[in-house]
Image (cartoon, rainbow, N blue to C red; front, side):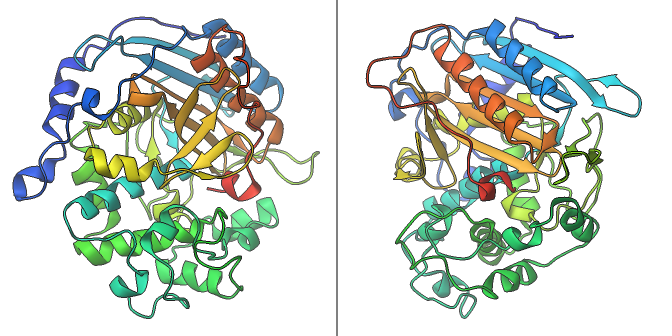
Length: 417
């Protein structure tokens, strides 16, 4: 049964103070807080979300094989000092063993939405003068990569040509997962798996989604800061935004606190779903190992698109778009999807075994949306969950003339991590 609430956030006041204060490291001689969102861009008004259609699509996802699904829409009227309207919806069960109902407070693995967090850390380092986007990775990590032409920008825009190591690792869905479920990899071991294969293209020549890029990004963060990526996520994003449900627990295997279970769909259509909740996620790390909730993802994207995490110039770098398939483009760790009504939204999808996550916000971040379906490797569910973007951001509005076609499901590599 669907559960829906509308209301205001009781913690908005403290959240606004945290957002206006900027990253916690600003006081340590680093750049101060970015300009207010209004200085970044003037968001256009959006039609009201079609909440009935959203609820219906979550039910459709269940009929297509997802044990559970939950979604959250947060709408700020005009600025970050007002009170948001929140719509929440849940369907199905969070744990098939005891039939516990899904809850909007459940935590889950967010897969490749982690890439946006990783990119924010690197762009903050760039703003501090500790990194240059168009400098060779070899300058920072000598001898790591076989081609010194690969730049930091190539990594974050998936234009390095580095082969995606997960393509072979998960060629067989369930056996591939079980082989790595409890393993702990180093970044360099994952990179070595990639470098066993020839590059997919010359650096900068083409977009080709690859988890390898963000493994190297994790190495960069740790080399430049001297800290584990966990520390940088916490100090630069999680603590400043008070994200109480967001964790990087690698190599621990369990999701802390109340959480949904995730179920992997096997290659054999007749096979039983596999509970994939507990795992090290070591195969993903800085490419896809974060845990979060719909509330925290809404907060993160609103802050990012509203200019609260990066200076305007660095956010503009993140939004330098390159074509990345029908109806979509990719910047730096950020995806743009062009909807049927002519509206574009910005964020990321993420799939890690058992969880398919969707996190997007409008221009300026005044409307943010996060959802999860508790299954993976299910194309029907993935297509249905992508359609929820239309209900949330286009509402009941008829498609605009000349608008981009409805986006299709992403590539297999996008769905892996």
